[in-house]
Image 1 (tube, rainbow, N blue to C red):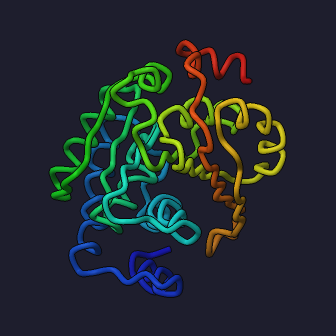
Image 2: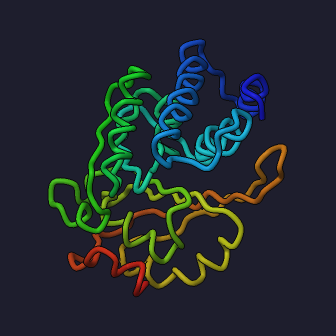
Image 3: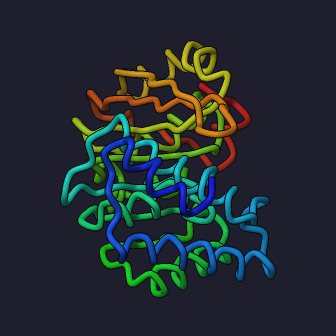
Length: 237
């Protein structure tokens, strides 16, 4: 997807970008490629790939979920800022926080935010398991997002503890999601969540399968979750 096609593809979804937003996406791409030469941020560096598989793919969450001004969003393991930074460009009144375990990536994100002149963004260098036990952060967010981080049974333990009761966890997944959701049914319930929808679609041009899974936080997560760093991945609920 060329950057020229990026705009009409979004317009088909009812999304119209301002010249400022168009420039922010272009600068995002430039900074990503610059920094990728000195640290591993993404395997995708061709402009068409980045616009389709990172920018458009990140924005796809908004095709199925209504983001509202002033909401607090936490992105777990965002890496180079996906999906939260594209969503922040699209919805500048969102307050976006990112937690990532690699300090170098946090340095990139801080530089990126300055380059894009983003306000209302915070970056935390921490493990998701530790972050989720921090009383300052626990159950403080309207939305948690995660894209291509781990299977659902692991993701729910990393993300649901951060969502306030009544909020939502948005998991951005690919093929195999139906089976993952079945396997994670018990853990989602244990952590206070309830799946409300699984929206499936295909990414334009390459026609690869995508899922936007929305899980409502119905009750408070038991205090013992998330468990110690590494445990959710080694011993999924």
